[in-house]
Image 1 (cartoon, one colour):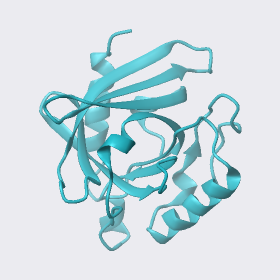
Image 2 (cartoon, rainbow, N blue to C red):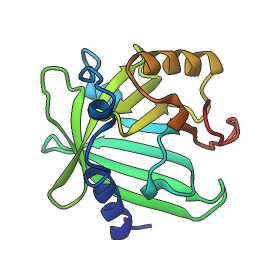
Image 3 (spheres, rainbow, N blue to C red):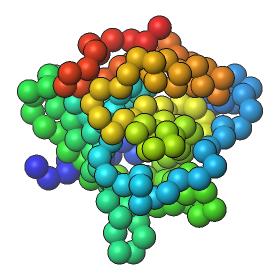
Image 4 (spheres, rainbow, N blue to C red):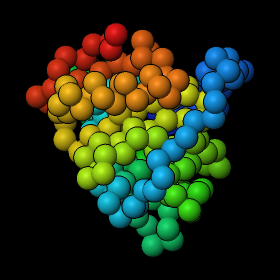
Length: 189
């Protein structure tokens, strides 16, 4: 299924029109730190969304995945997929691109799904074996917990949440994503 321009526009609009003051500014939090190093070759491939801050452009999505593929020019093709309403629902696909903006660590990227508009994509937690990743935004207004598999152990998930809390993220905003074989899609306390 081809990318939907409307979905891409919603992604960009929500990244840039989310509000005047970021969560970081509003709560007077220190700057968000990223991981020390990301090996882009190991990061490429498919990731399953385990939980995220709900976004308008993901409304009704289940079984959400993101696939990253390196292009010859050094940019990364980003293909987001989800099923609408249920795991058997209609597939929704959005294709964008990412670029590394911090070549020292490769942990700070920007993503674009529409024209010249870019949104920050920072890797703030990363499993040493690249089995999970946590992606945030410097304003702490966006958050995604990703896994190489559709199901993540509750122990690993709980440890990620502890670190997110220490990084200033509001856990009450985090919602689990319905994945095949995973727990129900419910808000995280």
